[in-house]
Length: 435
Ligand SMILES: NC(=O)c1ccc[n+]([C@@H]2O[C@H](COP(=O)([O-])OP(=O)(O)OC[C@H]3O[C@@H](n4cnc5c(N)ncnc54)[C@H](OP(=O)(O)O)[C@@H]3O)[C@@H](O)[C@H]2O)c1
Image (cartoon, rainbow, N blue to C red; front, side):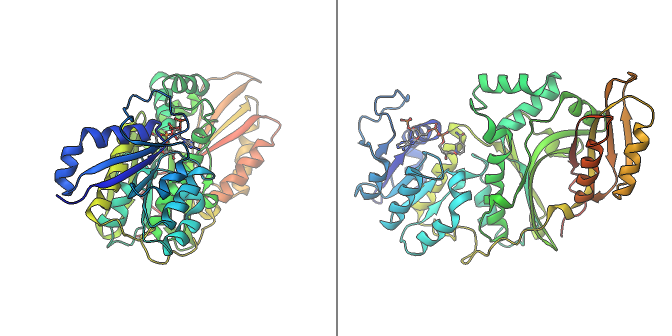
């Protein structure tokens, strides 16, 4: 047996405590697989007295997590505190400067500061691994960087936020509205007290930018992801989408186009005939359109202590085997992301209007659509309530996103329009993907 690999864990919350426990529970199995013991020697968190359901009495405790970088008894620093600023970045920086290996699950840090991390890695004997930073327990980083290394990736897309997927699934299965289901998600621990990061699509945009960086060999740029969350989705949207043969999913999509890389996070209508439509609850799904390999769909738990710990320990296992030294973003010299204007995307759209039920409204709407080059595929209105607001659902034929947005904005200004129109893409993944 080789010398033990010594681990220091910074952050003992949901993920950190689960990593500590997993390394203890599966110590024998890991030792046999890796031909060396993996041992936690030091930990750090804010509150030493907090009961975390793990026994840290036999390992060294550092009040300051950055001290793990100087600890001679630590070979691998596992950063599980979170945040793009402060202790997390300081620890990564100092650990790499000290030549230690770093494992992190911190998507915010990677999405915002990969450029600085790449610079730090150039002058370090250490490595940085981040399997848990995108889609939690799903081994998507390994799949992209190793399993699909031969492929010129066309697109990577999927359901990247379990909280949103839980909310949308519950809305569909119970017919309840967004605020009610959000409260249930918070009560069950799927959503934070401040849910904005999840429900406004920011968390999914961070993950998408990391996947996109790896798929296309460029620095992640979450600012280049057009991001829309799920707050505006109503139970009516979900019911109408169902009638038309679709389910609504918050999708992160990054794809190669002749104009550059197009990236978005937005609620989309997905046909019930494809597997992505049936990923329900807090599950995640990532599809990689891998050129020669075809389409690969990975599904599983995108969050949660145990699943995320599995991904963190997979990175530790690579270090133990001596094979963690892969380029951070798959290529030695990542390029600046060439961002495509998403207004030039073509596809079909779903538009929900809330308009007064009065003569002439549909004629006004049709005129705006015609003037904006939008061709209607279908129009749906239920019930009749003279001079009262009613929902009207339109679907379009293939059209430019920019034209569709312009039409929606103009329709919103009509006197008969009582709420801003709600626009969503219809994503079939059949056309418009470079092959
Ligand atoms: N939760 C998930 O399912 C999941 C999935 C994928 C990725 N991640 C990522 O994993 C990381 C950790 O997430 P989490 O859910 O485990 O977070 P968490 O439950 O909030 O735990 C954070 C831990 O970090 C410690 N900490 C925070 N700031 C610190 C500081 N300045 N000094 C020392 N310790 C500090 C906290 O200490 P105290 O306990 O003493 O307060 C706590 O133990 C994040 O980057 C997150 O994005 C999480």
